[in-house]
Image 1 (cartoon, rainbow, N blue to C red):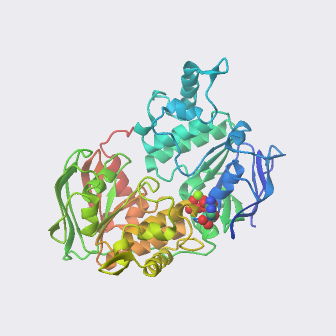
Image 2: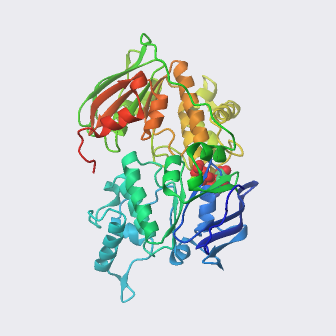
Image 3: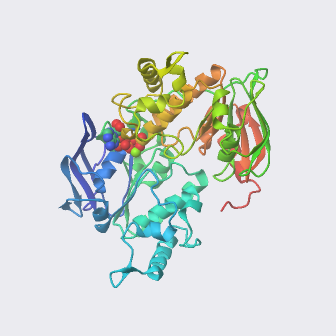
Length: 512
Ligand SMILES: Nc1ncnc2c1ncn2[C@@H]1O[C@H](COP(=O)(O)OP(=O)(O)OP(=O)(O)O)[C@@H](O)[C@H]1O
Ligand SMILES: [Mg+2]
């Protein structure tokens, strides 16, 4: 250890010798951790390091196998999340788990129990009033508490979840990757909320893979590796390079170099005047073999809609999509047959089959390839597993074996399994929506190398990312979308973070 592992004042939250084991795997290994009053502690580590597991134990969602949790110096036995909240431990877990069809107010009250009149009837007036106050605390005071959650943007949903965590005023708020799916602008909103809580004396334990925000937001950083806390340091003594080294346990990383594009390469993907009911105006674009085309824009600028339209995910599409000159029908299955694959942004709703193993999740979209023979429409288990093993190894999926249930993986590793699934279909065109969402710094670099390797093999790639440095690193060309329209095209060395930001905001006024 190089720095202090404890804060100077009596901690509000403390873990002593915490341990959680899943079968042979030790997810949380003898962890000591403290969070001081008003302190913002960053919790970082690679995918599968044990961050979410530790948080689940600290917030009563999972019982530890050994060790204890202390609140304000007192050992407590948290029987469940409701008890943790009552005792002042607020939390928002990594995956959004809101009731989409219920109102904002109802979702907020799920955190605390509905206010009842005479112990029986729900007092809606009181509920809405209470919800409104909490909504103001998280910057969504302008919304009506009766609004259905399904109609909200991702950042608003995150804000609702934080409001729910504030129902019982927390002494410590635990946030597991709250900004993973947010764009740069929305991240700023979230940081504002955290800073305000801190200024009122609330402590925060904050998990993130975005190292800039860890440095900008926290007072102290705790690093986990293989279930254990391996380092802890005051943030003022850290810079990004040092933090990366602490997380990966190695000195440096080789960054991929800029892709050079062959202007004469074959046009693999040809999108002509494509539009869907969700798009504002038709878009045309072409992607050559070996090219990585970036789509930049703020959340809501139409990037996901464009990818979905190209893939034929929304049944009503106008215009034409061609792969290698052949017209592609407007449906996901026609797209897959023609060699287009789409990695969607929302891994739980857009992809993972939660009851299946890692193996089956990987081969799910390409089972036909593993038939024993053309005339025998049964997959060969051996060939299927060989393929999943190869792909998992390629993407460094952290798992005991490919036969483990996919839901036993950490968030970032689930994302890698989805990427493996689409690679297994051997596409020529890969459409990737936020491909490194929730993926740690080391695995990100692995994925960048992989995407460049695929480009080198003649794939055509289209990448949507809210992280502009990622687009700068990955893309040979980028389109900027604003309010559903393509407003700029950048090429080669002109694809920079600064230029992308400039075009996203330029003339757009202040994004709401
Ligand atoms: N319910 C479970 N059953 C079996 N293994 C589990 C379970 N939950 C977590 N694990 C394992 O525990 C380890 C730690 O996972 P955890 O989700 O805590 O990682 P993490 O640090 O949050 O990673 P990420 O950054 O990807 O979210 C992983 O190897 C994961 O596969
Ligand atoms: Mg996690």
